Length: 346
Image (cartoon, rainbow, N blue to C red; front, top):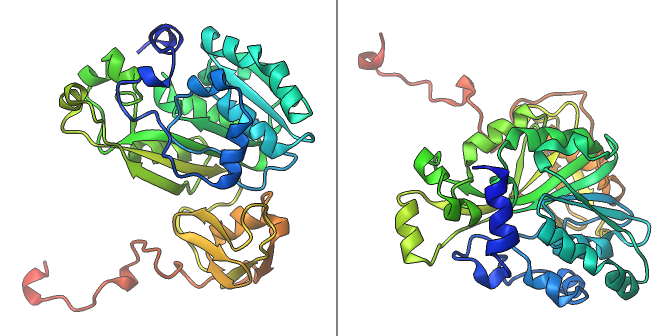
């Protein structure tokens, strides 16, 4: 699929979220109150041109420098602008002129609404981030909302994001994934592509590309099955299934390929705004305030070497290794049963 096809679909075919033919590019109604409050302060025209599939507003953003890949009309940019505050900055990148026209048209309106101006927009391709004049290693967080699936070179997007992140920074993004590789005929269907379906990566191919780009140990935060609710298009995508998932990818040196146990633990202080009782790193690390929480070496680094460090107490170090972290699997022969029948021996 060419850039021009996607530009036409989002710049000319779609005039608002009501024009979408599936529910792939829509965010569930459930969202935190602080996100609802941020969205309530955004101009109506910006809100009606929203085509995301998840929430890309991680915690602890005060003062952060954030980049939104495929920002469209700027809904998430303007929401994030409120979360980073006047000392932070949010940069939006999109290839569709019509979308950026909407975003820029309301820049002054939002500055007056917020009491400060901290956003900027660039037209360009997310596969060519090095051509936008953005400083390498200058962003704390990079977000994207249902856009990477539209990209013509997803590895280039991930590599570009890695290059622009600070050490300890993260890419926190929502996208659509398939349960198997999308057939070529389906990938060439312009409507299915524009609806964020036929450009979706097979989830395991995504994990491979993320690691190849330098993001070791991708962490799944949330996911939800997509119900297309359009009989005509459902027939065209069968038998594939799709899910909307949010991942966080950290730019950290020294992450290991498995969850290794060093006898470490952390205690969450409850000091991150909007998370007084617990902090959720991913779908299997929810840390209650004040409770000792054992962690593997990778999780330790994701907390100790990132913007989350001031909000935790850390127990232990890397001086002693105890093998694979319990419950994290691996293919250790020591975990297999030792009893083997004579008939099965060669």
